[in-house]
Image (cartoon, rainbow, N blue to C red; front, side):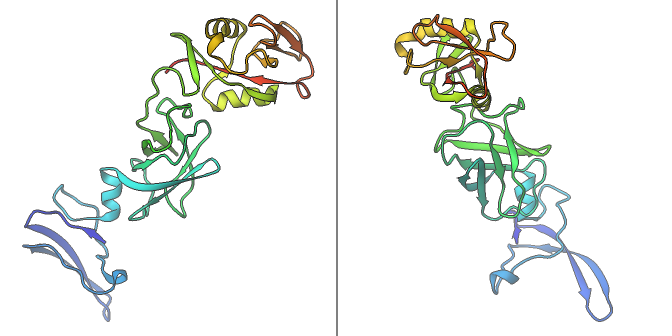
Length: 267
């Protein structure tokens, strides 16, 4: 396939092979109009067209895809991987490949992008190297990514203020509105990390709980994990069971359950 420039005069290098003598001839042909292909789609092609040496040269579809401009593609989510289907297909995934698609659903944390069937799925990260946080990839939002250094970099969708599903206690602290119930401590740490946040420290929890109390769901229903140990070896603290200041230590972390209400720094 070939994408031909719109200007009337273009030069195209043709390689002519002599089948019997295994000889090759190279020539330069000037054309005064567009090329018209005939025959089945599978045979309408130019073989051996090199990468363009000048800005007004003819380029293949592959060269056009990876040398400039975004390629629109449909997207579907499969577990933690965004499966893309560019049309025309991307033949070679090179650094600098730009893709644009509508996010299939709201997701955050650990995500991968596969730029088409047969290609490897690569991590999706923000320019700062962190995973997307809540509110950056929402259903229907137009997402732009670039392939670079073994990953896809999220170029747009900046997150301003608190992530979706959280509220600001002050200009440097956000807290989840609704906790994840009945979770082991190590799973609680993982959940907050994948959301782009962390377990609240004791001072963060009591401040956000006090300031946002009337706006938080599920408050004072169960103990909630916080990032403190009260100097107890092999233990972690929980807070918020009866009041914002409620606190206790749990020593058997592989058995004790608690709620998860993450804290974030506004982006």
